[in-house]
Image (cartoon, rainbow, N blue to C red; front, side, top):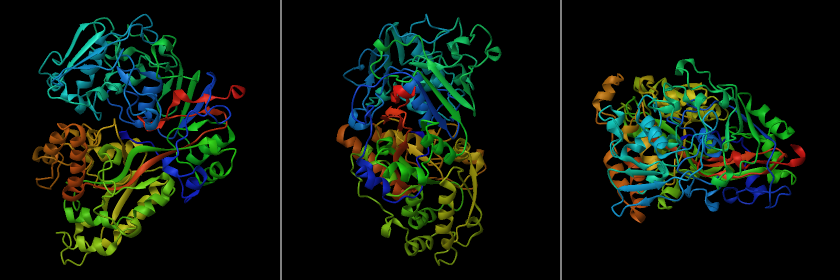
Length: 624
């Protein structure tokens, strides 16, 4: 979300959930009271959860681009000027709400000036418990976000629309000219062009305030370019255990990090004594504490949920026996939760790496892939809809709902059509529909090591071998896989495991980070190298000569539109990508599927992050 999407895979139990839950995609379960009906819930207890893999950027908000971590920020650790309520779209979960801001911003008639007024009384966690958040603290966060070293692999490209942001990041200015603070409770933002999405940018964790610390330019974050996550000072209802022991009077390299986040091992959140619920309408913060183990075996973790030893697996894949049990047992069905996640799963082809520098090869791959088989390996119809294009339909007002330029019978692939396309490729020297050039053998491919990605990789290999394409597949831990896909120097030709969820409800969140040339490494996440120029290709030793297709101009044009025209502009870009660029094989518009332990009496799905809202888990008082 985005960001690196959490694993939402399920094992194949075709139709089971849809039958049990009454319609699959339309079923949303949230805010269930102690008896399974809507009602008051009680605070208290400890939520015991698990993560299969660690967060992707060590909890640093300047560069953290993972849906799971975004949920930790929204629910628990960081407040921003605007935020979300931790519910589904139908319950206002995609709408912006004031958080640190007293109200939604005032926007000038020309759309260039945005004025935020801050609430009073919002303070930081210890050791800054006496420090109140000011507008300058948000400027400090944006100055850190502009630093390319602090924000590497992150999403600072979004903030380029703020006047002077890029100049400051490049060292050409001493301040960001588009940010001013007339007083401690007012932030004025000036943009280079009108932008209807600016408000969403101030709901992202990169803009969360950073407390001042003596004369340090970046306050408490000073000196922590790579490890600020373990020195994070909270504004939300929770903080890392041990935050109160941080000593920012010491030089950064002598400071001891929090005990509540041990990378690769555990996360422990405790209540932030500075948090004032009277200033926060968005977070009920039901649990007294949240403990998260990191690592383990997926099946074992879900067995622990079933046994009541764990309450929830944040990034897991529900195994077949557990899914079957929760789907068919009436006493457990209220603990099974399915929600559309506004996310796409896809295969990404590197346009600079042979044989994928040939559009006919890329089109042939789209025609050959058995998308229904891919979905079956994830769990069947309940896990989502077959994707025929790139952006999720909600971002295009359903204009491309029935569009699929590579549709095949039963979405199972069409080898005849794929061979006809391959026959037009320069890598098929005798035009027989089989790629016979050396570049078509041993194609470097990477995927996620978690189930069901290895099984999907085997299916992809099987689909492509009749076309003469043979893959050399290596599996990695999820964050490592994403890093390999994103790094042009790795020369990964085919990335088999990515997924993408919207950053906020606008098509720009698919367009800019995935296909604009500004999002090629060290930014994120243009794995296909769409728009790569001569200098970049030379720098990373690519033999392919430009032009690599670019959609930069179309993204700029689309982003200048408003209203209904904006939906159409994103749909037009989607069409161009699918037909003229062909960087992906999109195969699934994803659902989120969760099971929770019997201790959990309240669940809500956070549409913003695309995962469950951790602050809204409530624990049965009798089980606390």
